[in-house]
Length: 208
Image 1 (tube, rainbow, N blue to C red):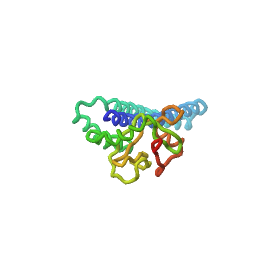
Image 2 (spheres, rainbow, N blue to C red; image 1 turned 90 degrees about the vertical axis):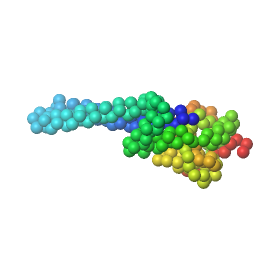
Image 3 (tube, helix red, strand yellow; image 1 turned 180 degrees about the vertical axis):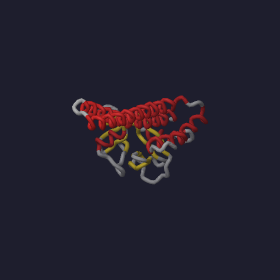
Image 4 (cartoon, helix red, strand yellow; image 1 turned 120 degrees about the horizontal axis):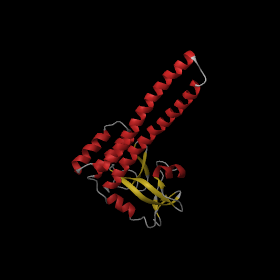
């Protein structure tokens, strides 16, 4: 189960790198635009464009370094030695200020001590598959989220920044990869978006 939590941390770190990569691409496109303009102007206008070009190149270099740094952080998740090293690294990630990275790092720490009964009960019905308003659903990867019991089992509830979880009666289950009926496996957030399911929706087992 800890492996699932660590993959979730890696996913969050790589997603952060992807976001910065998009910024890098946007800056690169701006550089191309400035370069084309410089071929068409002279004098003060060209000097201004040269200054803008220099600034964009500096920004591009910073973004490239940040992308590489977040990718390296993702690779380092599975390179930590021992439980103490893993805990220290997760605590370091939690303090970096990114909400999703911090959320996934907290979950990984909690995974070290979290019971597996809630996930086992949820997975026990996977041969039939839990049923959603959008049809049957297989859950291939998921994480346990320690949380005070409240909503009835099967209810979708908010479990963290941007995370919609499934109440189990003893904590929450955060699906990561799921497979809707007659479709390919996909990310949980993609399924929720397509099925238009939100907090308060219910999942039940077939025949329940």
